[in-house]
Image (cartoon, rainbow, N blue to C red):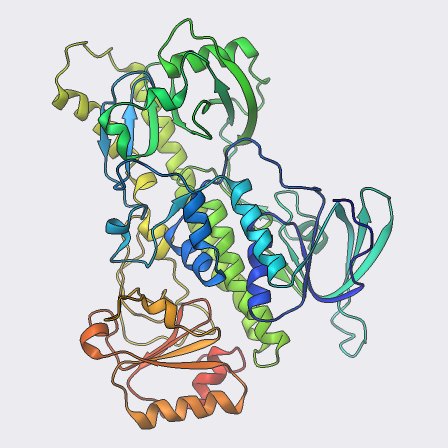
Length: 560
C-alpha cells in the first residue's frame, strides 16, 4: 500500500524497521499503552528464502503474552511424531543413519518442566504477518514505504527544550517527500547497516568472517521433498542434516516440493555458477543425474558482530542492529526478541512516569552480555559444523551392508560433535542479569552458566521458573502487566508493606499467592518480585526497607 498521508510529527517512540524485532518492540510498547510509530522501507512482507524459522521457548513466552502463540502454532511445521528429533542422513533419498535427541523444547513432553508452551518452527514472513496484524490491532502505526535518511539527537545540555530529543528525517519512497518526526526515543531495528548505530557513532566487534555461506532452494519434479521423507525416522523430523564426503548441510523445507541446502566458500570468492550449485544439490540429494531447478538464493558471511553499546542518549539498538551471528543454533532472531521484551517495558516505565533513568541504562548492561554470549555460542556451532564436514569428507565410504548399529554410530559421531547446536536450553532460558543495577542479589549461588543446561530455580537476575498450578494453568499466565509479587505463604505484613511502597510511587504491582506445596521446589523463599519481562528483581522472606527495594528495581535507587 502506497502511503497517502504522512506519519505524525511528534511521537513518544519511533522505531525504524518492521522486521520481527521492530514489530516485537511495537507490540510490547502498545501492551503498556505507549504510542509508537514504525517506519519500514519495504512496501510489503515478501515470501523469500527460508530463514529465521526457529522460535524458542523464551520467545514463545512473549508470543503468549502478546496473544499470538495459538495462531503461530497453527501455522507452524508439524511432524507425524510430535517428539521431534535431529535426523542425520548421508543423502536425502536414502534411509537415515538415525534420529538423535533434541533439547530444543519443540514438544510438550520435552518442554513441560521448563515452559508453558513448546517452541515452534515457522517461516519468518509468516511470523512477521502475524506480528504486524497484532501490532495494528493494538493501535500501532506502521508506515511502509518510508525510509529513515538522517537522524539528529538534541544535546543533553538542553533538557528544558520543548522539542523531543530525537529528530528523524523520513523519505517517502513513492513520492520523494521528506518528512521530519520528533520522538522522545528512537529504536533502531534497522539491520546490520543500521543508520541509528552509525549516527550514534557506535562501533562493533566480533570474529571472522571465516567464509561465506551460499544457500539455495531447489525443486525437482521427480524428487519432491514430501515424497522423500518416507522412512520411519522422518516421522519425528525437526532438523535434517546431510553429511557425506561432498556435502555437509542442514536441509530447509519451505513446502512439500522444494528444499534448501547450503555450502561454504571463501569470503572473497565469486558466486558459485549454476552448474556448481546443481552439482552440490545432486550430492546432497544422492541422485547423480537429478534435474534441479533453482528457485531462490541467499548468502551470509560467517562472522559475529556485537555493538560496543546498545544505546546512547535517546537512541537504542535492537536485533541485527545490535548483534549478528551465524544461524547455527537459531539464536539471532530470538535474541532480538529478547532485546524487545527487555527494552519495551523499560521505555514504557519511564514514559509512564514510574521508571527511573537507570532502567534505560540497564538495557545495555543486561542485553549486551547476552549478545556476546549468544554470538560466541553460534560461532562455536559454526566451527563444529565445519569440523564435522571435514571429518566426513575424509571418512571412508560406508559399506552397503552396514548394520543399523554401525549406521547409528556413524551419525552419532556427527551428533556428538555438534551437540551444543541441538541442545540449547541454557542459551534460550538460562541468560542472566545478575550483575544488573536493577537486580538485588542475595546469597543464592547458582551454578555457572551453561549453553546446554538450564538451572530452573529462582534466583535474582534469572528468568522466573515455570510452574504448573493445581488448576492446570501455568504460573506465567498469572503475572501482571507490570511487576508481580509472588507470595508463597508469606507474611501478610511484609506483603502489605511492599504493595504500599509500590502504590506510593505508582509502580504497577500484581499480588499472586501460590501454596508452598506447589512452589517451594523452585521458589525457596516466601516473596519473589518479578519484573514485567518475567525476570526476578528480588527475593526473600522479609525486608527492613521496602521503599528502597521498590526504588532500586524501578531504576530510581542505587544498588548497594
